[in-house]
Structures are given as C-alpha cells and as structure tokens.
Image 1: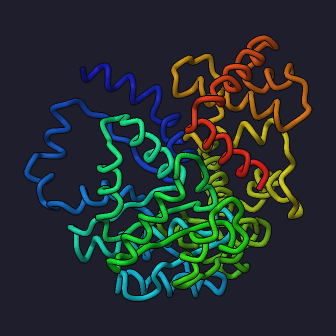
Image 2: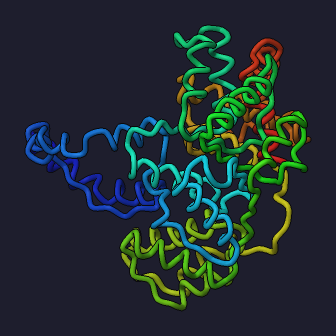
Length: 401
C-alpha cells in the first residue's frame, strides 16, 4: 500500500492541486493516506465534538463559505447587507419577506445564506432550507407523482414547518400543476406564523414575467433591496478578501489591474484572480502584472450583451447541471451527462442557426446523425416530461435573459 501511495503522490500531486484550484478557487496541500491513517487523523471522538450544527448546515443546503464574515460590504450592497443582518438578528420580525434583486454573481446567494449561517450559529435546531425555485418546482412535481416516496402532504410539511425559507432565482418559478399556487400557500403559511422568508431574483417584483400578480404583491409586503455592480474600491476589497481567505500573496498592482478591468460581477472578478494564481503555480512563476495581462486579455472587453453562440449555450447548460465542459464533450454515456448533453444539442438547434455539424464539433466531434437523435429525443420528452419543460424554460432565460 505504501508503494502505491508513493506512486500516486509522485505522479498526480501537482495535477490534482491545480485541478482543485481551478474548480474551487482554493489552493490546498494534499495528504495521501490509507484507511488506518484516516482513523488516526479523524478518531471517532473528534467527530462528536460539534453535535448537531454540521448536520443542520447540511440539511439547510448551505455553502460553508457564504457567511457574513466573508462578505465584502461596499456602497453597492450596503443596504442589502444591513437588511440581511437585521433579518438574521430578528428573523420574522423585521423585513419579512426580504426581497433581494440584482444581476448574476453580485452576492445575492451569499447574503441569503449568511442569514441562515448566523441563525444556526445561535440555534442549531432552527429549521432552515435554501432552495432554488427550480428545485422547489421539481420537488413539488415529484410529490404529485409520489416519486422518491414523497407525498404532497410530506412536501407541504417539509416547507410549511420551516423557521426560515430562502428561495433563490424566483424569476424561474414557472410550471404547471399548480406550482405557483403551492408556493402561494406555502408563503402564506410561513408569513402568517411569522417565519422568515428571503427571496432573491435578477429583477424587482414588478418586472418579473409569468408569475401571478397575487404572488408578486406578497413579495412587496416586506422590504425590497437591490445589489448593484461594485465600484472599483469594493472590487479591490473583494480581491483582498479573496487573497486573505485563500492565503494568496499578490502585489497591489496586480490587484488594481484586475479590479480596474473586470467590472461585470463578483464571480468573474474572483475567477480572474483564481485563474492568474492557478497559472502562476502551474508554471512555477510569481504572479506578475504581465502574467495577469496576458491571461486576462480575453476577459477584458467592453460591457455588452453576451453573444448567443452554441459555445455560450453549452457553457450555460454545463454550469446549470454542475458539469464541466469536458464532461459534456466526453465519450461518457451515463445518464447524468447524456441528458444535459442532449439538452445542449436541442437548445443549440432551437436558439441558433448554426449548422448541426458545427454543434457536433463543439460537443466532442459528434456527427450530424447523433445531434439529430439527441434533439429529437429531447423534443419527444418535452411533450410529457414537465420537469424537463421547466429545465428548458429556465435554461432559455439563463442563456438569453
């Protein structure tokens, strides 16, 4: 076993470290050990030292990194931050519901989940759940079909007995079989019992299409706050916070260059820094301004609407399903990859005029007949599969807001 571990360590350590960095944005050292070594590192008694809290965070569906401590406050988000702190300190009492809107990647999800983290730190028995509207729709449809052993009554108990409901991307709350009516009654049950509701969207309530007026009026009962694009000072502070959390050591001129030129959103801002650091470690060179300029030249373009191309569609589909681009273009045929791949084929055909041969080339060199088969498969499924209908609708809006 020791010889095998030594071989793995020698061959794959650097590759794994860079891959982890590119995916998570975290630079970490790797430890290779066997089962006996794990028992020494994590004895059973240590796993019992934090009773309940870790399980509560998991059940709430939270990202451990999304806390108030890691959130950078600036003029663009100060009101939203203050409202979330108030809601966390007195859930259900102030600003209920709290409706946060703003563009993608500006920190809405981070703030929402920070509220949940704060409340659970005070009371690990609080019943909290973070979901996207798409997850809510899919779980509701599953309950109607009694799929996964969840009945409609159990679904209602799951959501209506919460202390805090965080629902993201409310603009995608679309679908048949009374999805909006179900959410309407869930909202009322929680609100009437003074349970905290926090909603996030990419636009204010009045500008959301395809959602019933009675729901939109409920959203406006509490406080509506927006998050704007961060100014350059806030962008620099965000990069410094990222540097601090990840243990980077970056010259100020590099931080300033990235902050001055990446203006789209926080996600792309942090991603640019991660990209530069990952490359510097891969080539074993320090992070310099010239390296940043070379790596980010394609990221720095005038602000404009994203061009609707097959490549963009494939990227959105991959991200939506939690897959990498390499997954979609691979030869793998497991269901978790095949269906998103076919969805990408279908949307490329429906939303662009690009020849299917070109789509096939982008999806790993697949031929024309394979693309036709994938498109037809999705078209046929759409006539009966409501979850797929919902997914396609959500993806269309993500691809072309």
